[in-house]
Length: 453
Figure 1 (cartoon, rainbow, N blue to C red):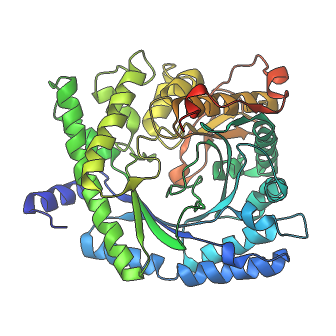
Figure 2: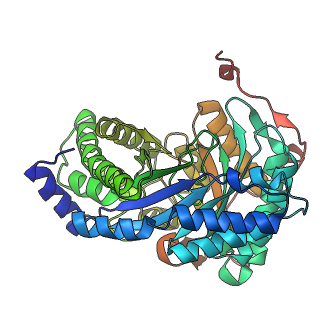
């Protein structure tokens, strides 16, 4: 792949003035060779394999940063869902695996390690049960381990027993990390239609269809899109879309180059580019700012869902043309506390959780990094998770909920999680109870369009 002089100049400008970066290089590692009925022996094997496979990840990323002048913000590892290993355990705990993963992450110097995960769209087997029962302790006794659970799919429907169990776990993790404002919940995602090659945490894991090891890259770039839109106020909708496509093409080309170079240097196959626009708490690096530059007075006002739909589509169209293999989640993320513009919209009373839910119909993932009152019941949390899963199931897309009940905090108060996790207001939730509905159990049947064979 060759870059023209103009492209090089544009990239330098984007890095220096528009907060462009490669958000993550994530090394996926298959752990199935580590299986053992003794959980402690399995943990030792997991540690050894992760450290051996990913030993060059951080040094490689640093060399590439120096060579190309593009920051690579996060270096991460994702592993096979730990529930697959847990099926063989004689002891009903997977916590030693989480501690081994955490130890490996610290040894490697990576930011997060993900894959303390389970896939339960149709039901819960022995390994799933062990994993679910271990999540709260695992997240509270480790620093860099992330967990995710897939509770539904367009082909299988929604496992409502799994939904309610996850609501209980969210509450448990919140209370166990009350001294940190429930921060453990920031490392826990509940999915519908989870993908196997997502490089972004906390929801990353190496799917069963993936190779022994692989490198996936997640790009970023809200600041680059925002800067371009700020100088193009008179464009019609088609013009706006075309501009965003061109910007997405450029930033994806850079991510593709970084991924391929890392693959050569590490001797690990290159997988996919995730085309997602991922915001940060930094000023000017906001999805909300982009939406308002498109013509909205405040994110959350009528027209927001339409603007986000166009943004998401244009990002995908431009990025797909710049990458041979696009995958992951690919779209626009709208995490609340990680996006300063979104937080301002909540403060302006133009953005509420119901509007955020509507926006998730047309963007990547779902209700992400949403701080809610600490006294929110598990029934209401289950209802929120079920709503997000239903959006994903019916629309045949990935959706998720990363909810953080903040102990002792009420709607309108503030919470600061620090770093990229950001800070923001506690957003209120609907208080009428869905208790009878979410406790019925069983499985919501898959929609009619699941019958495609």
